[in-house]
Structure formats: C-alpha cells, structure tokens
Image (cartoon, rainbow, N blue to C red; front, side):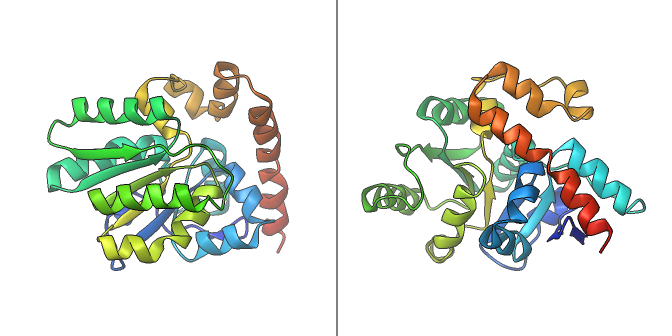
Length: 241
C-alpha cells in the first residue's frame, strides 16, 4: 500500500516471518526513512522492492488516517529483536547481530542469550567507517558471516547505510542461506540495556525520539528529529495527489 510515496507491505509479524523469497530484506520505515526515501532514489527503491513495515507512532497514526479500515501494527527493530529471536530459538535458527558499538553488540547478545537460552546467536561490530566500507572491513564482515552462516541477520549500521550494505551483499547472504535481513538502527543499544527505552506511554504518544534525545543529547539526534518532522509535508503532499 502506498504511504507518503513509498510501499508498505508488512502489517504484522506473520507478514515478516513468511516469505517465498530468500533472502528477504525488511526495512522498518520510521519518519526519518520516509523523509529520506522521498529524496534518496536508491533508498526508496530498496524499500519498494523488499519488505517494509511501519515503525514509529506518528507514521502509524498518519497511515491509519489514510487507510482507516486497515489493520496494521507498529513494527520496529527494537521490538523485532526480541520477537524474532524468540521465534529463532523455537525453530532452531541462528541469529547474527552485525554493527552497533562493540559494547552494545556484545551486551545485546548476552541479554538475548539469557532471555532465550536455546538461541544460537553471535555478532560482530566492525570499526566505524563511512559507507562503502574499506576492503579490510568488508572482508572482516564477510569472514564472520561465512563462519556463522546466519538464518536471520540484524544489521545496525543506521538508516540508509544498513540498507545499502544489505542490498550490496544480498548475493553473499543468499549463498549462506540467510532467510531474513532486518535493518535495526540503534536497537542493539536498547537490547543491551546501555540506553533505556522510553516508557510505553511515551512511545504511545509519539515522543520516543524526544526521549532518546534527552537520554543521549547529541547534535546529530537534534538534526535527525528536525528532519523527521518533514513527514507531515510529504504526507500532505502525497494525499493531494
């Protein structure tokens, strides 16, 4: 279904877990992703050609305003890391966490192992580098993935960067038997407990990004928040079309 100029095709968890094509990329589409996809042709194409879900309370409200009769859930990377890990542990699937800061990556793995003792999980956090990565970093990532051969891969490089990497490495992941690739931004920091997620009532009123800003007050988060407000411009622009 078209929303703010891009396609949204996953309304619930079952839509994500069932797929005829392997590997499958999932983009969790928040306000920032919507704004960027309207100016970034490659990101828009990746979203339109793969699986996509609504992430964020404000995009969810706007989607329901446009499609009031459609049942759809908010599906974010920060929620999926738990529900998909539980599913993987119950079905004997391996999960790999790629990206994020080293302490967040290892902390998320430890937390998920405690929650799901039967879960086969590993991860790797390469040194920070703009995309495209150097050959050295690409080889490090490749070797770790070949060694583990994940069924499900979470990629925490940040919006845009993670989607480009996923598309560029889709052939490799297909050869490894990876079924599902999920871009999850900063979800490892939440899963590790390094940063506490906003209380549910804050999430429900659409202020989770503001909460994150106060928890980790940095200029790039202010800039990201301001950019995200442009979702209203693109929403009303596409409503008129």
